[in-house]
View (cartoon, rainbow, N blue to C red):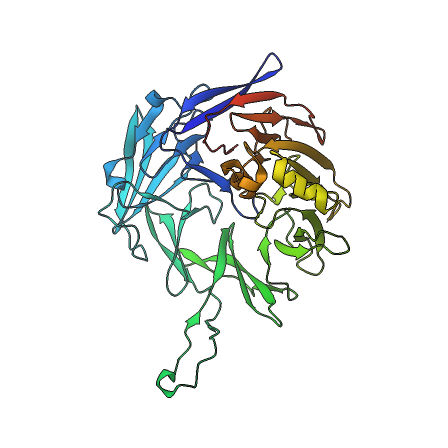
Length: 458
């Protein structure tokens, strides 16, 4: 059974209400993002102003702060095997040569529109039950009715609403050129292993559809294991009942950046950001320990801010960048342990006799175009592993997978993300963050079954 809990404030106290949620899956945060991986999409499908949960097989409506079993519906059978997306409270399903649009009315989905459409690509398997959640609706012209966008072999295909139906509105050749795939050295001996090899060509890019523009982000090899990223921004205009390029594209080409960083969006400006992790070893001490370096660039890769933390060799935090205070800027987060503080004797003693892991979370606020030098939030906690560390109990493995501490949820709704700590096997403790200060003691604890996983989706 999967259980969900909704947080609520009652007379100043934070309480959690458990609810059975079989079929809901919540995973870790997406890399370099503050959004949790989920097997559903949030959308207001019944028009009550509350976010409902759309699955590939049905929909759960929000009622009274939860998703009760009596407020759940199934998707129309006509949507089986199709790609699904939502816009303006409507459900769109495309595939199998047709486009269907549904609205929720009187306890069931009602078909509002149906038409034939030549959708590129093979699409989902029509023999399966349910659909597949996707992203193909984009309001390109800003008129409130979305356009349909699909990736075809030759470029991006757009469909727009004209004369009561969707019609092709342009093929935009926005893909960068193909590149030869780097091949490993081929053996010359023995003679039987000699062979001619013709390298394949490939192209990888990210395409973003926005208001009257399309942006394409790609990368190419640099020197000594580095990469050079390029962004091409295509302004769009109207032409013959469709869209076409308008003017020359704007091309941004960055400096070569290390292989361990990836492009991301850490603030709302127009400059590409880069972030990533790199492992290193400490020096200048009796006991060499593993360091995790968190890298961030806010100026397109011209310069990098690096913050280091001592951690176990296998440990990788699930969220390196979070907008902790709700100002629209992603703050840098490091997590580490104090297991290795002191000398060799102290460390060995902790592993042989200790049952707890001291854990430390530091958040460096993004402000003024940079990241603070000193941590703006510094939080310490102790995690009970349920047994001696040298025996590697199950919770110790959960700790190494970064499953025991989360900053993903704002439980009291004040705009600051709070700290949830699985400090014991049978409970999860919530430390509220107020004005960049986390509570030293738990503000509330939630009893959880032993052997369970605790994840947060806010």
